[in-house]
Image 1 (cartoon, rainbow, N blue to C red):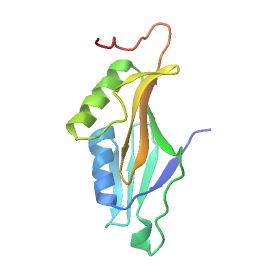
Image 2: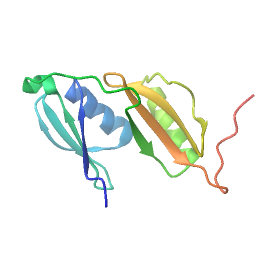
Image 3: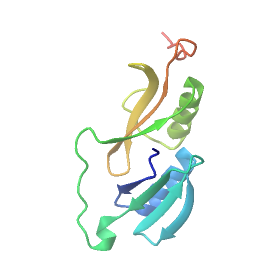
Image 4: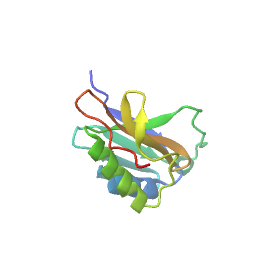
Length: 132
């Protein structure tokens, strides 16, 4: 079984669409003004961005603990993504670090949605050394 798509509600579809394209290499498939956008990645995952208010519906907050996770292959890719987001002006909860059995970081963006970017740590792959 493969996850096919996720419908994410945001208040500003064009801003969110641009963010996912610039920061996470998603590709725009279609956009319906400010109400809806459909993006995809190289793994055929589809992200639907929807503004409920544009469809005369209520925008509801996500519950505590809700977040979007991006899984990368290596600590170097995590560092590259972190630097890309730094250049975008993203505010982080912390720098990349070891989190349980992974290496990654968290941040909030787009209506205060929590994002996680990480890679699994194996015996062969280790996180970059922290500077003292």
